[in-house]
Image 1 (cartoon, protein in one colour):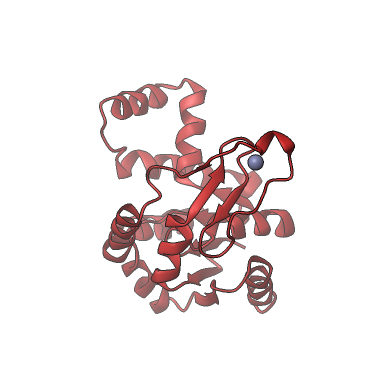
Image 2 (cartoon, helix red, strand yellow):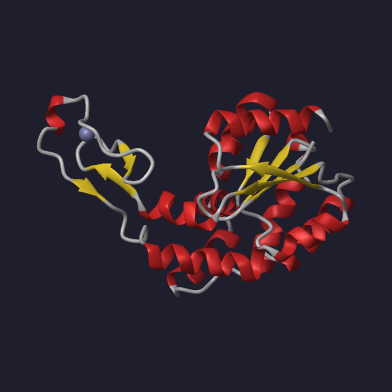
Length: 215
Ligand SMILES: [Zn+2]
């Protein structure tokens, strides 16, 4: 079973990927992890990637596809992959189709995590954390309470600089333009199952389990 976990930033893809990994013996494939892994290896490709990143350039689709192919061809994780944050555009989706075909695999299901954008903006822009113990809260959904630890008495609540409404809106626009068209592609292949990701985490996991049971 290979799964694509699909949805806008803040929809809970990472959380639900962890659930899948822990309960279904699957391996997560995210491009960020792939790049970090390659960089650590000290290979010649790693040096090339490092050069690009230092120059502030984007890592090309070609390099990403190479890294993805390495994983897809790895027998140890064959048919046990969760694609998280990849594909990001229609070109990548088509490349993924042909790579899977080349290694005798296919996508079993595309889990489409659906959340209203107004909620996503609040989920991300409302995120604050304790400056001492790093416990996170959300000003809208999980208002800050006192921390349990006494050393947090003089805490301040901090916010990541990119967690503001403007940045989130920009990321959602990019998602709409570049990533969302993939859904049409997978709909044509009859692979898409919708998940109501506005429910709480355990409810979303349960919906996903039900979908997997029905495959
Ligand atoms: Zn604290």
